[in-house]
Amino acid sequence: MARRYDFNYEAFPAGPGHCRYTEEELRDIRARELDDYESRVPMTPAEKRALRKWVASGHSAAESPGSKYICDIGMDFLDVYRADHEIAAAIRGMTRAEKTAYIKEYTGYVDPTPEELERMDAIRNTPAYVQKKYEKLVRQVFLLWDFLAEEGLWHEAKEYLEDHKDDEIPIDFSFVLE
Image: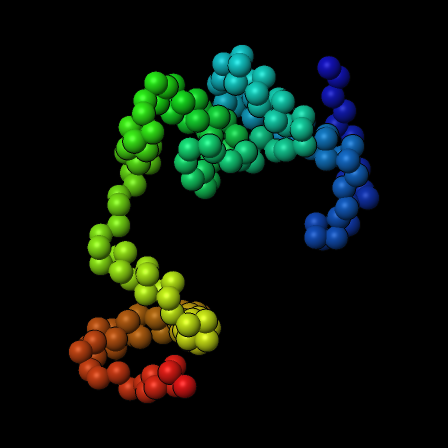
């Protein structure tokens, strides 16, 4: 299979946000990426076939297909492919409860404590207007901390909070219930 690598760099606009790739250019970019990936990562023939099929379907080699069993944040195609095959082989013949226990152990999942469950229920049952006010307050606090970090005052603010952590909160939260 001959591959073309004739991306037109002269036509590439000043900013990549303004670039519109043609389907042919995207295929060429993915083919280059696949060649590089295959040269760096050792894999079995079956893995190579699956990866090539994934890329041929219009995806990047670094893109995750989504796992059947686990949360795959930060994993590329081959990592997910291998993990799914490993889990599928291990749980073959197990009951549903055994499969669930195996996957929880594999991922390091810990069941929430009763206190955490109670907190999650309280959050779910909080009225929407209170949640919106809370989210706004969290954004404001985040922006304040960001400002302090930008100005180089983060350490001083942290020290101040540490020194005054037992003080009464100087903010009236009654507005939340209005």
